[in-house]
Length: 416
Image (cartoon, rainbow, N blue to C red; front, side, top):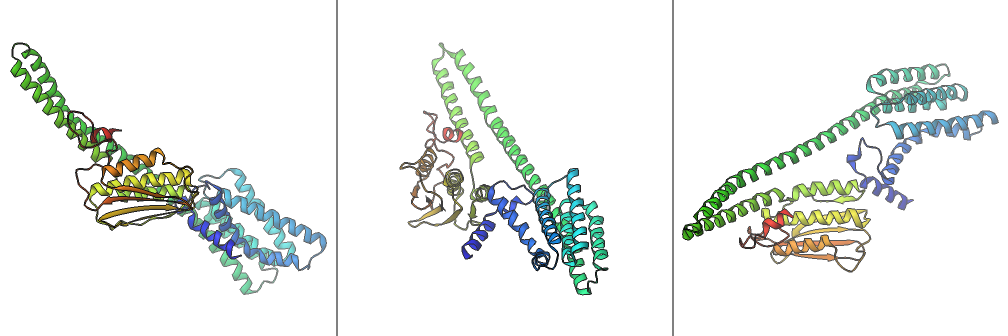
């Protein structure tokens, strides 16, 4: 019993709260949703006890159990599948009508214990019907419940205990439906904002490259033509023009490197948000800090952000984990350490993959190091010096600073 309760609690905690308004995407989400719906079926204890007591004839008991089973099946299927739907097909209204007929027949023939079925009918109407329809259907169901309960001599306490949940439960579900709709709209708005931000960043890069290269390339073209006209009569002046071309091209390369480096630079705040969303989408419980208090230069923060992105990608794709924890803090020896650990199956081979190899190279260029630990789960630790030099560029996985002659370095790495 305790182990089952623990597993149920872990499933609820691992469920993605951003999944409100979405159909279940995996077996775990479907199980959690079914549990939340089924737990309210405990209120059917009254009709179940009434049938189990044997106070009815054999035929009435058999028909009662059959009708109750059909009612519960239809109710669970309706609420489970159609609560989050924008529009309802005609068969949904047919199912609601059948639920109302079953509640009416069972309540009138088998006794007041079955009148609780009207409460479930009201909740179902609030869950699946649009607001304008639910506003008059729920009071109608409550009125029918009152008409059925009154002739059967239900006392005031029993009547109130049925009418109040019927009315309030139905309208509470209309509020839940509205919350689901609002959550869906907010999610769509957030995705739109993200797309607009990405578009704006691309436009910024295009503007920067145009501004940086337009003048430099025009100047290189003019000086190349001038040097061509000076040869072979004026080799000294032509050499001076070639030297100017080299200087301008070097400066253009530096400017492009800085622009692209700034464009690609990651930060921990954004990566933590992205990691939390990726882990929860994969059904992995995310234990991440809400903010980073360690003192980091922008370059050091970017290096750790790249490490976090690679580590979380590996957890989502390969680990099969149920939980992933992230921490950022002092690593000893004047370093800052990012730790990413999971409880998955651990590494499948003896060597590191291309992703971890590239990450290790990136950290080495930053003056840091990478440590991994397998076994039960997998742990990754990325260290960067607390006094990380601004000359290092975390976006450059391919080499060191530009040396001009080779044309490689950070600009080449950033463009890869």
